[in-house]
Structure formats: structure tokens, C-alpha cells
Length: 272
Image (cartoon, rainbow, N blue to C red; front, side, top):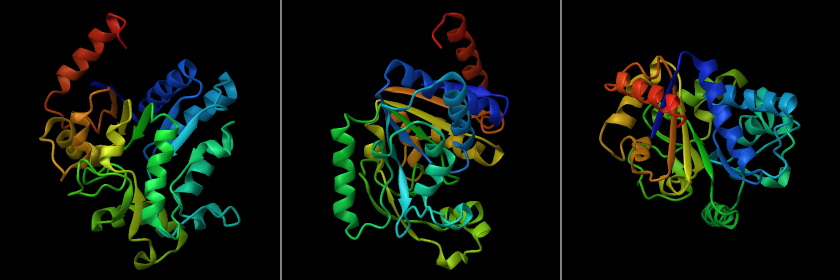
């Protein structure tokens, strides 16, 4: 596991975008797992810049998103701030700015009439694509990945998940409040990749920023593996793992000095 610490959010985002860009350049038809939320926005902006200024080519890339609210789907006729779907988020924050093919972008369909059947189909599509080469992840305030709330099985697959109070509170402030949507009117269920699905990605890139994530980052990386902190499953992954943190998010790590030392050594020996 490579733990990379940068001074601030912008530097963290540039580093993460560089990791993704390297995958695309080495394997132009790579399969990326993508995340929503505020954390990856800077990374997406940098990828857009690379596409426009450096010719980073997304034409063969296939993407699968982690999750979507049940009951929501993209509506391009709505103003952005009134469409709270993750499909719309991905379109506005990344897809419409790059040369990715629409048919190569998969975001769970929150409007499906048969969620159970749809979740099985989503798993099958990931397998048909050859599996995910690089999965981008954030981490929730309670330590969750995607919408795998505390207590989710670490072997779970794509499914419908009820959202807990902290997730509802966090997402209301970040996405729904600005649209004037009452808290009790926001979706309380979501379709989400499971932890087992995520762990099948060949490589993982996890990002975290800010002091509010410091405690949960420390629990995730240095605490016990537990379903109460579903992101702690990162310790079980056997492929390539890169964790990119800003100084604030890394501030509670017990082994911070060691991680900085290891990164310096790897750079000196050309291993990063």
C-alpha cells in the first residue's frame, strides 16, 4: 500500500489525476471505477485539463460508477442544482468535458423498476468488461465506501442499501439543501456496489481531504478490519493500493512519519 501525503487538496487532486492518467496512457481501453461527492471534483477537473491541454484520450475508456440514489436518474432538462442524481453529477463534473463515449459510461439506474434484477445485471456488465482496472474511492464520515453503511458485509455485492442518519445528514448539506429540497424528501435508499465488488478491482485509489476525515482515515488504515468501518476492507486488498491524503486528513495517523519516509525512499529508488 502506497500512502501519499500532499500539502493540500489541490496537490492531492493533481497527484490522483496523474495516477488515473498513467493508467489510461498505458491501457487506453482500461476500465475505471468512479466515485461522486466533493472529494473527487478536483481530480476530475485536473483530468479535464489534461484532456484539453495534453490530449489525454478517453475514447476507449469504460467507466462504472459506485452508486446512485434509488428514485433518481439524470434529467438534462433540469438546471444542475435541481437534479441531484449522481448520473447528472458525473455528466456535469466530467463526462461532458471529455471525449468519452456515452455508451461506455455506466452509472447505476436509480429509476429501475426491478432493482434486484438490475443489480445483478450491473455485476454482470462489470464482468463482461473484464473487471475494473482502477477503482477511485473516497471515504465517508463514518468510514463507508460508496453507500456501504456501517454493518455492511465485507463480501457484499451490488444491491439496494438503506442510508443511515449520518450519510443522510452529510449528503443533504452537500447536495440537496442548495436545491431547496426538504430533508425528509431526499432519497433514503441507494443502489451501491458492494464491498466484495469493490475489492475485485485490480487496483484501488482512495482519496481523503480535510480534518473532518482525519479520525476515520486513521481507523480505516491503521485500525482493525471491521464491517463498522467498511473502508477498512482496503487492508484486505491484494492488488495495487494508492491512498492519497492531504496533510489535514493524514494528521491523526500514528505512523505518519513512517509513511513520509517510505514515500521519500521509493521516490529516490524510482519506485513511485
